[in-house]
Length: 219
Image (cartoon, rainbow, N blue to C red; front, side, top):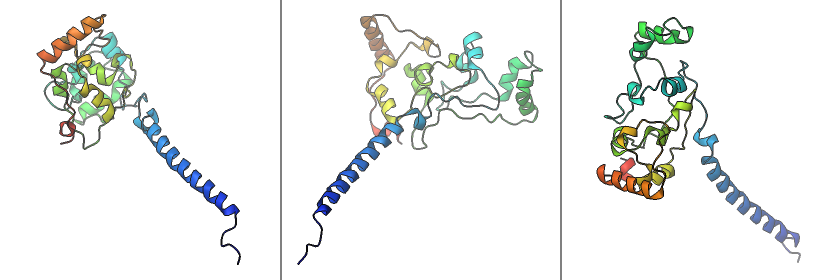
């Protein structure tokens, strides 16, 4: 009686098994790498806005404080989007006939908000409060990067859970004095001893503790 399977079928089975395992492991590895890459996170991709607002000029050259436009950042979960009328506080007198600012004037006279495109978007199941971070000494630059060097704002960091937890596990080195919250290019003390002393002081003064409970962000 002849065998049900030919001798070479063992080789085919081993190759198929090895190939399946390689495909599975490789697929998982590719997925993990891809989800951490800028292709997935959207990092460093400038977002085109309905009005060309150059932060390099407004923040870098003119020194406008972040809180002038994002006025609710110290008192609410959202940093706030500036109303069109705020833009015209300056631009009703400066560049008031510039074609680049025509959408701003049109939105103001039509009493409609400018539809700015969101750059930093967290999933709906994540709770984030700007005011508590500012109150505890986390600077704008820590999350948003050097806004004063961006012609069009792009996402600097991944804003992934792992990235957030790095800070929540060891917040001290990320803190800065409150008068430096909106400063771009903030430089901590040069020495290790100085940085450690400042971190300890800010942790104590601002009552900062590690926050790694799921309910901190998932409520």
